[in-house]
Length: 454
Image (cartoon, rainbow, N blue to C red):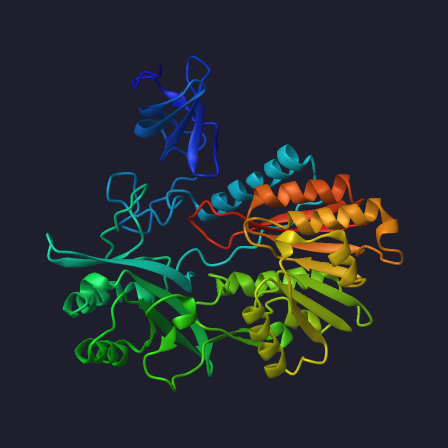
């Protein structure tokens, strides 16, 4: 049993941003708030046979990478905001940790070692979060409304007054939003405000989606209009599911984001899935397409294509691009985006359940010279397994050939590692490159990009 007076030397950082040490008995101790290289004492809160979980209680040697958090709500104590986990670690060191997590996952889970480690993609450490889901709660005992992220390891909402990872305009709006909701008749039936920042006519547009469990009366609607005018925002209302989202007052500027390197403009709705970090997304799309190295005569398939984030830029380079997504409604939106960008003649879209892919379905999509794969957190196991099956059993689809190059954009290092293992050990590919993408600074979320070649 760990003695709270024992000094522990922190050896590394895990994916949850906890320091990892070993006590005198050799047991692993995960320590919240501790950084590699530090010597700390820790108060143990949970004990298992092989490990303990603790919170740092004292420190006698500090890491050179420790920095003062920019957010006053960041911390380890009860009531601290749980939106960020790494603000006490220098941003450059955060990226290094994520790169190590990626490499460790590839090797330990997939037995894959990339031939080359790419320079990480990184950008602004603050003000980057153009999408966010803010919880709302009216607290009668306190006579106030809370708007923000949840407290660390809690279902309660943090008492946030500012948030440096949000755009400055939105951070400054948190307290006015609390006052607005507190003034509304339906204040106890408004559980959520979703944020989406887009572009329109060269300027940024801030959209706020208000989830309301009861119809809003005329007085509440007017309060929203007054707030929109005072703070230059769009209000969207969501009475039920995401499909019910609509503008409070139609006619406002349309949300979009641009990919200027390819001359592409991507309209979206505030509840659509788009990348949280528009700056990083712009860099990521450019790097992915350069790594894919598409030639004008080639055909490309973009798996899990979404609204066409990669498909439409690819269509500016390839002979033909097929975008495949699971939702027919989303596919229709992608077609509209292709039409608006004048790319309908080169970008085609189809809907298919990619988690139930088979060798027969894969072959039916035809031969493609290159693939772009950008799956959700679950990864692309069914797709990659179908590819491996066709490689190992070519008689299943005479004349079909696998792509020569695959660029895989991942939001989960563990599922990327699993899929990479199939590609390398069963489908005959080499992992020629892999690197981290710091889409979410100060969080433990690891995005990455990897290249596979035959």
